[in-house]
Length: 52
Length: 274
Image 1 (cartoon, rainbow over the protein chains, first blue to last red):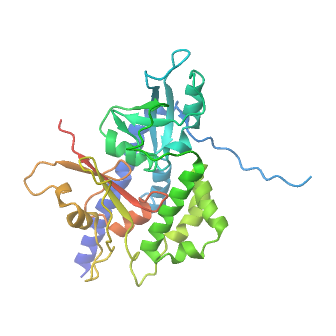
Image 2 (spheres, rainbow over the protein chains, first blue to last red):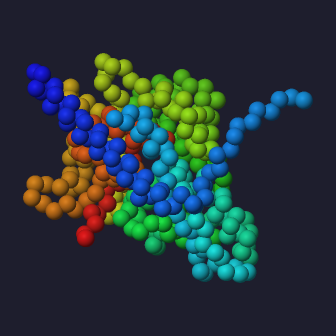
Image 3 (tube, each protein chain N blue to C red):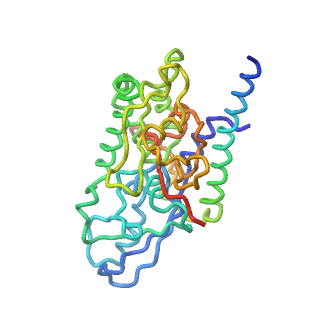
């Protein structure tokens, strides 16, 4: 039983690891050379207006 | 090791570097310079192209006309997420993504009109409601208040990850005894078909109690997308520009790689031949 459990854990690690690695590669491919481009949506700061 | 929550952030902050060029047939007063922008993968074109419109209207003769986009002869459907449009039509091409901007000859046969962002909001909220009908028989979305729905929309519109996920996490919950959602909201897109996408009922867990995987879903919905033993790979299966392993559990994918509309958008595209 412990062997089948460790098999499952190692399989899980493989697909999860693959996703983390690929997202990191995607970021390098799609972002690293283009960081000087403008963002489409401005990161504005939320301002609460109170009654005067 | 990185945390699963980091995946949500990576997905949200995915960007496509894009070069917008004006269609040469448009009537202009002077030559239009191309415009470069980082487009959020999880957003929709009308929400992220205000700057593009402003840039090109400076040189246009006409004003107040509906802007639409095309990539290599294909009109781009604004009601698909940006990342889906890129993965489906332009993955494996050289970046930046080169999009042509049009103002005249709107292709009514191919595209829906989008006169304002409230049309995008209606489309987005209707997708979220459809997804929750599949996941929780609409119980979660119906229990939310109008301001909660607004928070989901404003989070997407203003690119506010925390604002969006503070509410969206409720749509991702399920009881441990069920082992997942009732059905997985997914859409499979393919380039070589007249059908817009494949969408059917599919459960995250088999009747025997084992977790369904991405491979199980494709085997049932689109077996041609899979590579058989000894066969050359013909298709790539892309979600947010990456190729998850076929043994990835579908429930996990639905929770972590769904778009803000709560659907898992899967693109099946021809594998590069080089």
